[in-house]
Structure formats: structure tokens, C-alpha cells
Image (cartoon, helix red, strand yellow):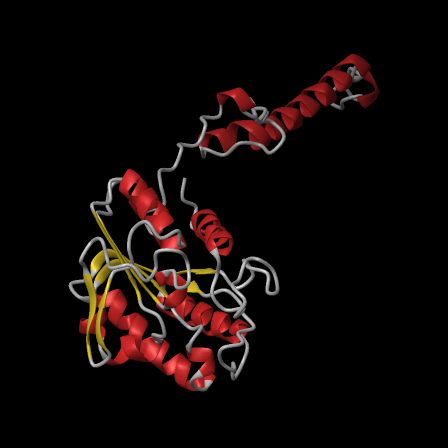
Length: 291
């Protein structure tokens, strides 16, 4: 064979170790590339791999670490709250014979206060003596202990919502910090429930305008023998409740306080005895939340 020809069979053969090394380097390069793609590049962009960041455990505060809520003060939207905070100096109670204490001992005596509670088309009427054991005088005694310096029992036998609606100045006078109105027992025997509603809305609106706070009281149920009711006192209660809710007046019901046919009433089954009047005061005090 000529000398210038290369005999390929004489070329060195590639060793197996060199091939394995090359393959290992290739795998390492791929692995490094994956690490860069998964961890280094996201960090440079401000991202975090979803499984790479361990979320801190949520700590639930212990019950004892939770601050106790502050104690709320008296509800100043109620008569009880206003009385408790010394905002009531004068009270005027508008009502009929149940408020005046009709038939209870001493009712017919001359007024010991000389306070004129009404002067108008129906005549002139003075305050019931303060020693008559009616629910209103029990209210008077309580109010005086709470700092009320001017209390008027303007209960007049036979009077109705219509009188208050038609002559508010004659019956309300100069008004008061708080006016309490309990009327309807006579109205149920005199006019339709529709007329009573109209008179009540007008009368109570007038009372509201002359007071800082108005309390509307539904009278107790009765089965009077001295007159004929045109409808039940439950309808009076319903009307007064609806009007109070619509206008934002404070309302309590005495409808269920007395039991007809018992010693709660005099024989006419309309006017409360001393026993019945004491029950009215207790219900009035409790249902208004008075201490």
C-alpha cells in the first residue's frame, strides 16, 4: 500500500469513559436549566413558586385575649333612660277617670294642689288630691324620688281623645318634659274605631309637639255596665300600638292587666279599685323598665 494513504484502521478508537462523561455533562446542563427556570428566574421577577413558599400557620387569638365589649349606657330613647340620667324634671299625665282615680276614697275631696288641669269648652277641672290611692299618685311618688319636681295628674272623668284633639292647649297647658297619655276607655262607647284613630293621631301629635318624650298607654280591658261599648278595648290597643309604631312614640299596653269580674274593678266593671289601681302602677312601672 502506498505511504501517502492513511490506513484508517490505525486511527485511535473513542474510549467508553469519554462518552459517559459527555452524557453526564449534558444531564447536568439540563438540570441546571430547569433550576434556573423554576427558581432563579421567578425570584428575579418577584414571583414565588407555589410549593416553594411555606405559608405561616394562622393563629387564633385566645378567648382571654379578646377585649370585652364596652358596657352600653341607658337607652336615652326611652322614658326610663331619660329619667335615669336626670333629663326629666316635669311630667304631665293625660287621662280619664281611670287616671283621675274616680270612686277611690278621697276622689271627691277638693284638690290639695290647686292645680288647674283643664280650662276650655268642657268647663274647669282641678287635679285629683295627691292622697287618693290611684295608680297616677303612685307614679307621682316614684317620680319625685327620681328628681322630678313638677308632676301633674291631668286625669278627668269622662274625657276622650276627641277633647285632646280639639283643645290641646286647654288640656296640655305648657306641656312637660314627658307627657303620658292613657285614653280610649270612653271613646269605645262614643265613636267608631275609625273616628277614634283620626282623633288619636291628631291628639297624640299635639302632645308630642309639647313634650321631649311621649308615652302612649293603652287602657285596661273592661265590661262596663254604665255604658255600652261599640267595640272591644283590644281594638283601642291595636290602634294606639300602630300609631305609636308609625310615629316613633313609646307605647305600652295595660289591656291585659286587670281581670274583669274580680275585685280589680268596682261593680260597674269599668273603674279600678285600689287593688286594681295598684296593679296598673306595677304594670306601668315594669313595662316601661323603671327601676
